[in-house]
Amino acid sequence: MTEPVDATLPLRRAFVRVGGRAVVQHQLDIAIAAGCERLICIVRSLEPEVVALQKRAEAAGMQFNTISAARDLSALISAQDEVVVIYEGLLADPASAVTLIEQGTGIFVQPVEVGLAAGFERIDINHASAGMMRIPGHLIEQLVQMPPDCDVPSTLTRIALQSRLTLREVPPTGFAGSGWQIITSESQAQAIESNWIARSIGNPVNSSPARRFARNVVVSFGSSLLHAGNATAMMVTVAVAFLLLALGAGWFGLPTGGFLLCVIAWLALTSAKLLRQLEKPQIIGELRPDATLTALDWIFDALLVLLIHWAAPPLAGTPVLPTLALPITFLLLVRLCGQISGLPGGGLIADRMVVCLVLAAGALLGIIDWVVALGAVGLAALVLIITGPRSS
Image (tube, rainbow, N blue to C red; front, top):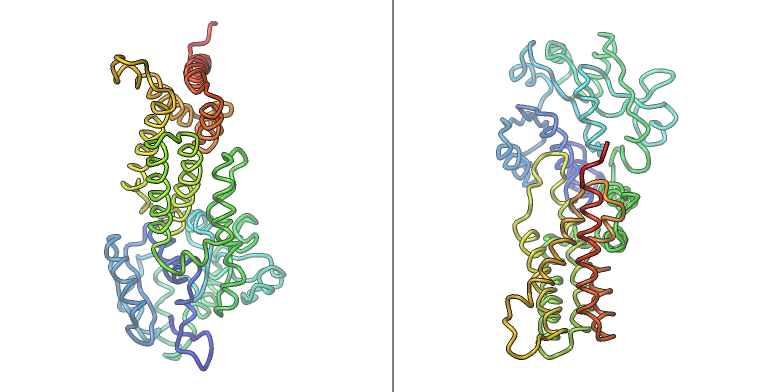
């Protein structure tokens, strides 16, 4: 973490932010996922970004060291160690990087025409460096003979090539689009950010309409939200606000409006889940179920039960609990359909945006009780058909 993005600016390349997080934090994702036990950073000074990196690395159970000269590495690394070397400013696809690291020692490379265009250095006639490698610890000792201010990653690459380490090519899926970049400026980071966000949150073929809509919102506006900080919390706040408005609409006898407000709340909640995926990448094992998002999921369904109850009030004298049983059963079956892998249309059925639109239409037409009853029967039959035993 030594090179500035510009001679007139103090900002280091490693500290340029992509998706609201410094590039070096994305590199730490890879180190944690690869099971590294120690993090050694080459720095000019102990800047705030270095301190933030240290806190997160130590929270993940890693030892943390900083050095200012290449020859200091030999005091921290033994011949029996294996070392993952990451170039300054490398923004790599975590899944591809970890897969390559797990294959064993080697120099990670890419086709020379792709690598040179992206700013990587050529290492032979056919290959350019991919900005990362896994090398045996004994190669570090050769740095003692080098000038103190040498470029450590580049020098180690030459040493590794002379030692005839295996060349491991990054798969095309790894460096496609913005998946494998050397970040050298803020303008470059801004140019690739939308593609990086789109790649990071994925685009499942059978994703629900709400997720597709939320994905488009996050790809278009996620960058500004992430850079502002607390992007997930901001979208959660929006979701809660619309849920409260929906509750008020139902209370004042406007269940159709309540269901439509729930559509917006669900889109905000889905966007919050995607933003959290960017803030806490799944690849590193730090993404645990968010208690707030999980609770909101259940609160959302509970509110739908109330809105259904208010849209189809029971006859006078009818106990409340039996009248709630059918909408509760319906929403539980909707949730179950979303959890059954391989269920045809499971994502569509479990999409609360679609459910709310159907319920809004039923409430508008005065047939919501029939919609819920037939829906519960249909979903129960579908689950039985899909999960039932097969006759031989």
